[in-house]
Image (cartoon, rainbow, N blue to C red):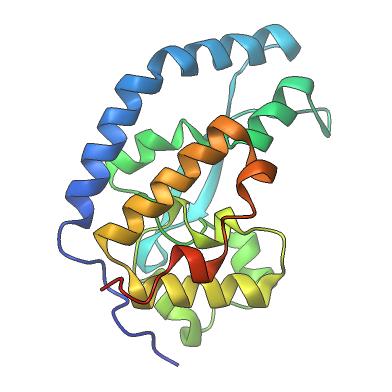
Length: 196
């Protein structure tokens, strides 16, 4: 079943570049501190690289701060995961055009296979670049069917106003943690009827 308005809206790439550029400047010192904390906590390297499936199913390599050591989440890693700061290096992916600030969760090839989303019936999900944040990322943990519904909702209602709202919510999660912000993060509150 096709999704209305699956293609990116006009100006999305410009918004991505501006937001990622500003975030890189603002968060550069924080990223350096995080990298040092990861290395001091359990050694180098501070970054973890993984292949993900991008727009039109093209593979790309994503960078994240490393949060695990020998199969366990580290002390620093648990803080990074809770706040979403482990994904700061993905801003480089946004500047390169591999990702967007807001979009569906970037899946690994293994995820696509496991979920059965390799079929052409799911091509709609790959019509936009995956995002660092989005409805699925903010409302994670409620199952695959719910995530697919959120991706459809975002793609059918995507607009600059909605992206800015999701970016603001993600910043709040980074500052205060997902638990404190979760009460506000509900689809009916984020995607309002007046969004174009």
